[in-house]
Amino acid sequence: MKKNVLVFGVSDSEIPKYLEKVSETINLTIITNDSIHQNLSKNETVFSGMLLLDDTSKVDNYNYIYTNSYNFIELQSQLNTILNNNRPVLAIGQGMYFLNDLFNKNAKQIYDEIKTSDDLLDIFISPGSKTAAIIGSGGFFKIPNSVPQSMKEFQRSKDLITSVYELGTGYVHGIESTLHDWVLGYQFNPFIDGPSIVRALIDGFIERAVQ
Image (cartoon, rainbow, N blue to C red; front, side):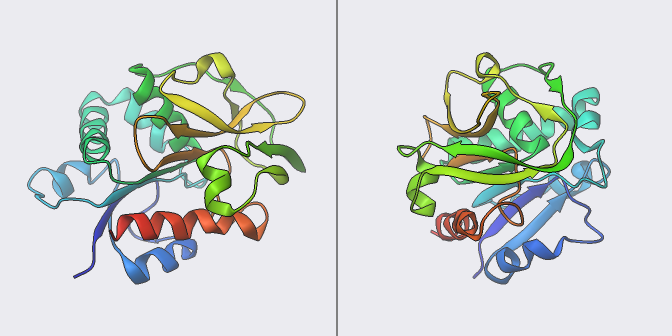
């Protein structure tokens, strides 16, 4: 029987093609701001992991969560259950910020707005991080500049470490939990952004979720 992973941040009517590899191995339960009550209120599924994604066509996904207390509490509760069960979490884009806010126990932090562009950003993956262990290498990489926010070191939860940062600015582009086996967040989307080597993060999530 397939395991089941909870997904937030994408449309339930048009699943991104980049999720096809995950859905071949794992059942995806997609929740949205419109369906979070119906999908979860009577759902007794024990989820084997969670994907906090970032659909750029629906920029208000997380903004709405922060302004709707019921949805926020529901999503927070589901994420906490998965964390307490030490199941894998992969948070991308705005999802990384939501994950950081949850660890900080803040409803929402104010992050700096930055301009996106077609230019690639120079990032550094810390050699001793879990990210480096999964992809088989740390060091310098280039990724798209596609998320209009930035996290500074002082805003990162003390229960998270910085695994990826931007050269020059020092902005945080990757975080990892020190309290769990597999809880990772990235400013970029490892499904589609950056060099092919980072796709190993997806394989790592799948491998951990089916255990």
